[in-house]
Image (cartoon, rainbow, N blue to C red; front, side):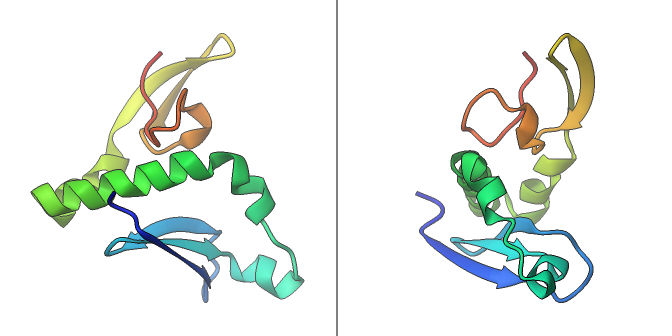
Length: 108
């Protein structure tokens, strides 16, 4: 398995909450705005955790095999998907459009 640990942190800038990895640790970053307001956005992401872990694990595996540049370029690939009868052009990491827990958006 490529992800074998989790860490929770808070952003120190104005970035929204996000997910990334460091080595084999998945980092869940809360926005500074939510932290200052005493709000947790984590309940909103719970349904997506399987896909998020899978996505970051794919990054870790690609980085080990092909290097950092190839791993990070994964998020730049765009696909066109159909969702509720409409077509959208989204990146592979837009998990709202994923049809499974792979952490990747694939055309339907």
